[in-house]
Length: 144
Image 1 (cartoon, rainbow, N blue to C red):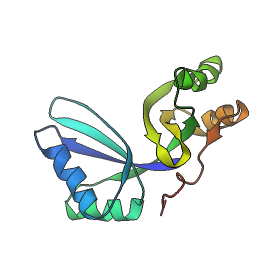
Image 2: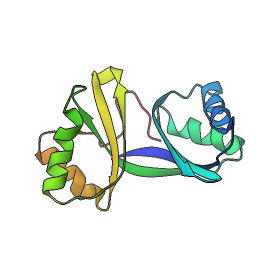
Image 3: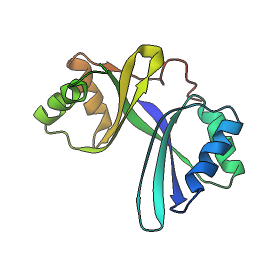
Image 4: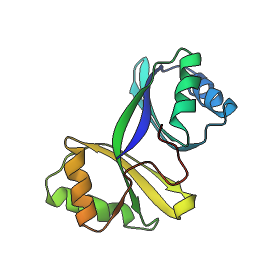
């Protein structure tokens, strides 16, 4: 599993910019991002190259952030790539509760980030199906 940064932010114009700008000012590179929300708040999820620097930048902005473990798996960046990893999960009746995808150039593939009710079992299923599951961060990223 890798770790993502998750934070609750106000759903207002310019708010996402202020968070992303603060990270960029500290040299944090965002590999993947997802935002969802309804009403006045949203949840921003980020996969970054340097978790410690990102967390310090967010704390400086008075934005409490959580570091959460998530499953990350490489898939071919081609039609049907995502379906290939979802099939074994469906076969095992694993319910995916959160999912986002981003292209990760250093490995010339897409990375699927997902959460389930049992992430360790999910990793085992994906590994047994022949997929590359990232265990200690993405190549070139610092987890501490």
